[in-house]
Amino acid sequence: MLSAIFKKEQHASAVPESASTGLWQLALRRLKRDRIAMFSLFVVLFYLLMLLLSMTGMIAKDWNKEVAVSYAPPSFIYTPSVPGAAGEDQSTESAVVPVNPVDPLKDVIAELEAEIAAEQGSGVIDYYGVVDPLAEDMKAIDQELGGQLLDQSSELKQSLFFGADKWGQDVLLKTIKGAETSILVGLIAALVAVVIGTVLGAIAGYFGGWVDDVLNWFYNIFTSIPYLLLVLAIAAVLQQKGILSIILILGLTGWTGVFRLVRAEYMKHTAREYVLAAKAIGVSNMRRIFVHIFPNVSHIALVQMSILAVAFIKSEVILSFLGFGVPIGVVSWGSMLNEAQSELILGKWWQLTAASVAMAVLVTAFSMFTDALRDALDPKLK
Image 1: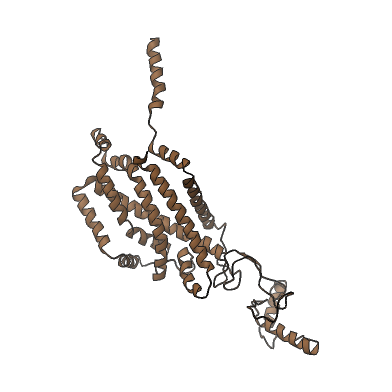
Image 2 (image 1 turned 90 degrees about the horizontal axis):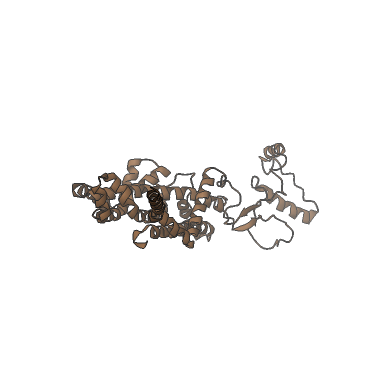
């Protein structure tokens, strides 16, 4: 009796030691040992956190507010020059920012007063209501605002790490707000394309026969149409302009590559021993497709999602150029790059740099993390 109990306890203690580690547990262990993958994951999570904060309005809420003059250059603290400021060379011709942008004639009157003062000793000109008929109304509004409207001593000071665009908007805030649109479009459209391609490819590769023929016929229709014409056709069917339409256009046209790769992998795994053993014990087809086979081909779907996310962020630029991109009043990296084309002619490079650097960092980090995740999930690399 005691020997039987002892054998039971010994057998129970031996079970956990002989139990195999799951696929995702092994993948997690490999990822933790990869420092580059962890750093890339940190960068991607930082972008996602910035995305959430932007969506909730905690940051970049006033991205479209005019905070500087047109095409203000990058600087830590941007302070427009004031006519007659101490230490300023009056002989050199430079772009002078108006002290009062609401009343630009006030700078002209200040110059006239300086000339009269140099000649006659008095430079006071009573021009209200004569030179500027709106001066009396502005003076009344200024009194209501406590003298802030026409205050010559007030200067515009704003941190502009990436300068300002044509409309005087902070490029840094614009880049953060544009990340919200571009990341949402890229990730969600890539997810839609990967889900469609994976499901159709898994069904075609697993069942084969007439099911495979029908889905391949459907695949050939999409690949035979030129990509640009296919995009325009789907955009014409949707008949609306916005972020949702961009996601649907990209998702419904980008699944073909995923379908081809997943179908080939399922055709190989269907004939393997672990799938035949699951079939022998009565496991259903759907469970074999998505529970037994899919974890062994999931690295392909993840890699394709990374590639498509990068491609879709770039495709958003093309759609914006064709008129099917983001609507007016919505900013994205694509619209910023589109605006930067005309700015480069004028030598204004900072908006192009801000959008390009932000996109390059995210794309590089996302690609490196996906490659590391692919290696960790690949059964051949265990």
